[in-house]
Length: 253
Image (tube, rainbow, N blue to C red; front, side):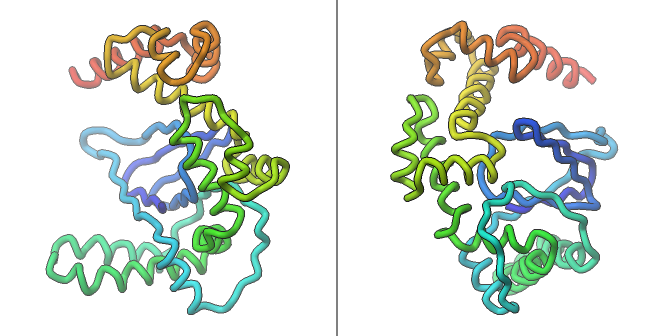
């Protein structure tokens, strides 16, 4: 998807990669990544406003086919990028959003403006990444398949052989491209998913940390606590308590 911020700022992190974007830039996400994000520069008078657009590979490929051919290296670039907003891109986005005021025009005009938006994006600095999204048989498409497999099986032991079979890649090629595109190894990716899911489960109910640890796939509650501490900077119990206190104090304000 592509994300545009209309008001405010957002900072996101994947492993050790930090990105910040605001109305002067946009973000392209080529695949699902275990992100941690924080909204900044927002309050009740000036709330955070953003809009995202799912990128359809078929439409991207169709628009790209009308443009001069480009030779891109299928090396597996990092799948999360920010770039400066342009006047042409902002104009197309505002015209797309303005259709909300005339719903009857949406079926006819929205697809046309969306194609213009994609055209402007393909012309931009992330055109190569977008063309990779439009080619499911390339390295990015194969790593997307691996990511989908891990998400469906995040709470069971990771089998590299299964990922190789799913993607049609050798172990060496899978590891090289997975690391380049996600910034993580497959095992690290699964660990991030487990820890984020565990935090959601802890926040949602009254289950103990050990119960949640086993539910998300850990075989040792102590290992879960150590990795949770490294990831979030606090033990599971303390982390959840601090988050709830923050939410409670924000509600009071």
